[in-house]
Amino acid sequence: MLYAIIDIGSSIIKYKIYEYDSNTIEPVIIHDKTTGLISYRKNNKLTPEGIEVLLDTLKEFKKYSDKLHVNKSYYVATASLRNITNSQEVIDIVKRELNIDINILSGEEEAEQSFKSIRWIELVSNDGILVDMGGGSSEITIFKNKTEIIEQKSIPIGVLTIFNEYVSLLYPTKKEQKIIIEEIIKRINSLDIPEYSEEYLYGIGKTCVTIKKLLEHLKVKNDKGNVLTIEQVDQVLRKLSSNTKENFKPALLVDSERVHTVIPSLLIIKALAIRFNIKKICVCDVTLQDGIIFDVIENK
Image 1: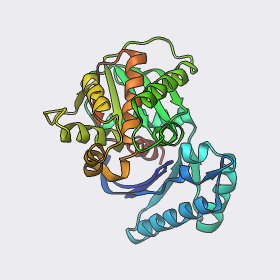
Image 2: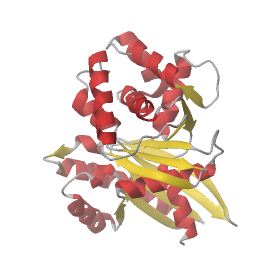
Image 3: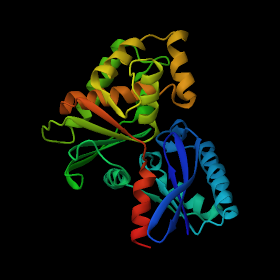
């Protein structure tokens, strides 16, 4: 059987098809489309233009599913629709126009599903903190023994909100970096998370994969392993703290769609490292969708 998971994010709408056969789950098709829904907001509402962008993208993905004879498609939205005041209106329009049901995940549900994604991979340590950095929010899970959840929270700040609210040009300056890190820590502290000290931060999603590629491209990281250090993160932040054409080129070559969000993502990691005394970052090439598919299969 074929299942499609469509993740409607603040920046990107992700489409992923899985094949399920005899208790085996295998991702077979991945197609993401950058829509920047967070940019189509006015008075905290998704604008008519933004709704059209959403409809056009979902219509395209639905057409793919029909042609590929997908058995079931699941549409979920995160901060893209969670953080607007006309979310029900948007859901109703999508249902009326495309006969698609969208499930808006709460921040806690998103963190829970993100955590399930690590079932796909082996961890360097079974204790640590998991982060999934989205455009409009960042979900963290503090865990023990790979399965025991100690804390699970949604931080109401993501890579696009950082870029839109705190960055004056393309890259944040050293002064802006300092302000951003302080704001992220402030928002973490507002969630009443106790003081924890963990060596490893596990980052899921394509944003973390882009960070790894950038460090390799800049020769800051000289091996192909998935473990980064906070010292390497600091080195890149210092290196790319000025808005010059020379500094833009590495990110453009590595991932042109994330050129404006790669430094904000590094700043989220830096803030988490300060708050939780993290020393190393493990890049995990899995996504929120990889967590959701387990629920789909187990509850089918």
